Image (tube, rainbow, N blue to C red; front, side):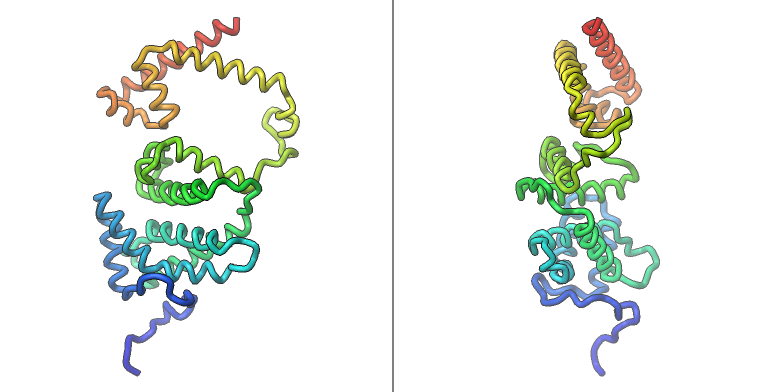
Length: 274
């Protein structure tokens, strides 16, 4: 029969359902795009290639999402989860790894696994605004891609730069995760007792508030450069090397500056407590 033969590697690939996006490109075209994405380091080229591949496979992601519709989760939410997982699959896939299965065989279990995980772990107890829900998905994808690329945990500033938002927005998006599965009041805490006991400890809460006020005043009393270092390290979460680049000093000098600042702050807080 004329036409391209179906290889054994494709026989178990689920039918994505009716197309809802651009026609899916031939596998060899996809592999070439993914190979170029894997090897290029230019941010604009990476964004263009990633968007092209993702747009071509939206029908696949949506089709898998629709299989889970009618189970108590909004269809739009399912599509968002599936599309986010598709982006993750594009970032993780290695076209030159030697496998013959191809991208679809890699993407399908990635997407279905994320959909199943969504049903298992995710049920909003406190539903944040839609904007934060969507930003949370973008932040998760960005963090995953950056970790894979750099082989380490990434900073808030790195994620914010990739997503195109402020560090504060990244932290807000991260905080929405607590709306999925809030900590049980019966959960044990390291110092003994339960979370309910800790929250009921008014004296401890007031103590933390006083320390927080004292610390803010101590930081405000620092010099301009020291305040900048504190902000870059503990608010923007830059590494010492990144701070050094911003200030025009070495990483070792930043380390010494931080040690001195922390020593000064400890001394100030100890004096206030005396």
